Length: 91
Image (cartoon, rainbow, N blue to C red; front, side):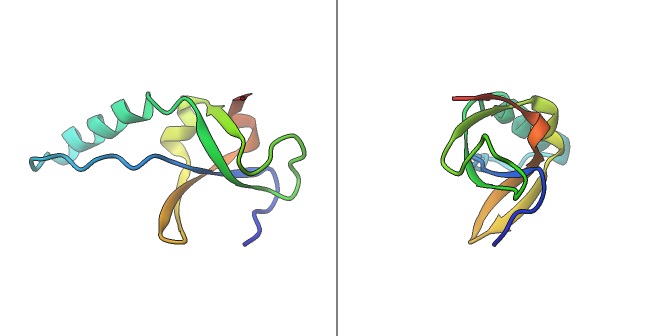
């Protein structure tokens, strides 16, 4: 797999399934709350044009990108595809 351009693929934590059935709106609110806790995500892969971030790095990603990034199934796990510009901090 090759990520092209100035994109980053990050691993996201699994959100535990609610013990009760939630409405779509409640489920979305629950997911949005969980996203706020994602302050250090691990980089899974980087695009061909990125030079200062590498796979395995921990990064802080701006909230807008966490909410709007594309979710992709890679090797049976959900990853988030975001633009390089959404990375605010490299730990």
